[in-house]
Image (cartoon, rainbow, N blue to C red; front, side, top):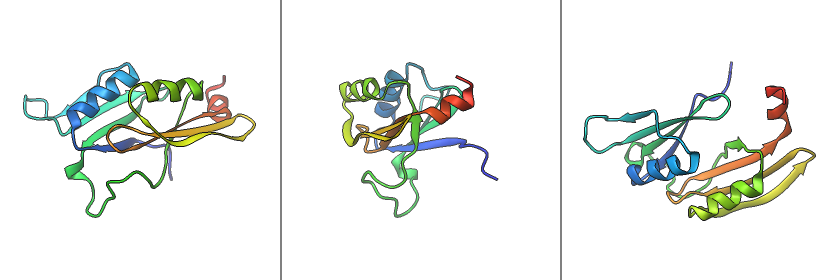
Length: 135
């Protein structure tokens, strides 16, 4: 039934600023923007990582009714090779601590920050992720 996530959406009041921030963090430009005709952009999408996962930045006006504007809820963890280096990089770009670096067992280390736009960004070293890749 569930075969893998298709797109992860993050909300932002200032989509332009969020798009630039994530482009700097990720080292890639968004491959899709809507609209693409000179009007203010309400959606940016990036393809990143080993599986070209889609990360969308969406204008908060399109959030579901009643959606919280404060950080919380489910956390999607992105695999990283070095949790401390990732935390340092995110902090240097203005992200705030949310969950400290935590060992979860052999080969599993998690952490999370709040990006400058109020979204929780989780990241972890996950040995199972590497096993699936055959590394």
